[in-house]
Image (cartoon, rainbow, N blue to C red; front, side, top):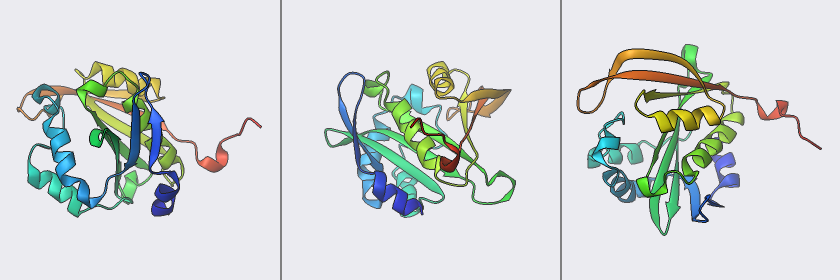
Length: 193
C-alpha cells in the first residue's frame, strides 16, 4: 500500500515562500553519497541535536541498505540537484505504540525560514493519514524553539517536558520536549464540496 501511495504522489515539485523550486521524493538506496554530503553540511551546533552521528558514512550506508518504507519513510527535498531537506516518518510496527509514528526533520540552513520544513511535515501528515496511524509525535530539545513553534503551527501540541532527559551528541544533558498531533483518517475528512 505504501509503495502505491508513494508512486502516486512523488516526485512532487513545489515552490517555497521565496519562489525557490524544490522536488520532494522518497529516499532511494542510491542516495547515500548525496545524503552524507547534505548532513556533513549541517553545522555542528545543529547536528548536536540529532539522534545519530550523521557525518559517519557507515550510518548513512546502513540507512540506505535497510530501506523499508513501511517502517521508516524518508522524504528528501532537492534543489539544483542536491539534497536540502530530509524528513522521516518512523513507524513502530507493533505493540502498544503501533498506532503512533515519530517525525524527524533536518533542513539545510540556507533553506530554513522558507517553509520547506513545514511542507515536508505536511507531506508526512498526508501520508500518515492514508495509513492506520492515529498519532504523530516529535521529540525535540528545549533549545530548538523555532522547530517547536513550527510544529505547533502544524497542529502538534506540547504534551511533556522532561528536564535533563536526553544527552546531545556532545554528552550535554538537555530538556526533552514531546509534541503530539492526532490524525484524521482520510475516510473521515469532510470535503468542502
